[in-house]
Image (cartoon, rainbow, N blue to C red; front, top):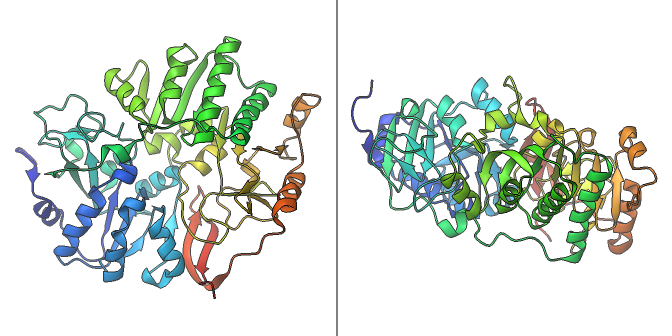
Length: 477
């Protein structure tokens, strides 16, 4: 039983955790590209002589490029988590750098894997922007505030040992407590857990590109034509420039129609809270804060009456007794590619490189009553509409429509939706027509050069089965 302060050095916390070669360590990604914790911890672990560790982050970002040094030296030899940017690119060309293929899961599937023991975590390193010496902590106060700790909460429940890492040690008790001391083994103070300018974006802005604005407006027109925008509906918002525009336009339509949504879930921005302030939505489930305005709103408004932290398990775990995503009436999502069977790729680029994670894409697509994908038909000279996606992340049987700058297509299996939009003033097309329009501009795409004898990563579906396989990308000759 713990009776005193848990504040120790990082080295001492690791020793107390009983870390051994081959064990699994986890991190959360809500510090995003401003994170200093992963690199600091791995540098310390390497200095202590550990080898063969499995890294199980919710996601890695370009800021985590130093992880590659630890892969090359053998400190890390397995990765189960999203690899955004240089780490994914390196592994795409060098799969033998890892002892086994990388495993990618959605937010909800990862939560289920932790709970079931499929992904056992030996030591969870939990970044917190404020903590007391006993480990009661949060992510909304302090110089490195990043928003509610929706992802790390699950790790704190199931990890064998939990270490809080913070640059802001406050008097006991912490004002707001998202992870409680009963789950915490050690508390570590560092100089800086992250760069505030890269943790969240203070200049997150709506796209100004006409084709993308048209997509955002067309999405709202489609949702409205289907009768979804009405009192009591629930929606999920996003944080990309096009998704921000769609969120703003949806908010404008909500206010214009005089309806009130019951709830919004997902990554939040000022545009979501603008809808709330105008009376357009009653309640907000915050999974991540994507801008400073969202962090400030959560800090300045007591949790409960207006908003609550949406943990990864509550959000979407298929192993739980209820999922917030199953109450969604509509979700709009992006993708790197969409094919004629409405399969969506969010993990690889068309050259086969594994550069992105799954996030909540599968979770919300499967849970929402209406799932719509927003993308242009081209990205530079590469067709995004194609015969077959390079990698299937989200299968077409849970995708209901695709909206592009060249028209929108509804999945033929949704005859009910086709009947509702019949005769409406919408730029309807078949998915094959959208593909043809893309190919007219670019020509038929060349399949990626991959070595199918070398597996880079496995894309898991919600039930833990393998949805698709990512193979080694061959160097250009």
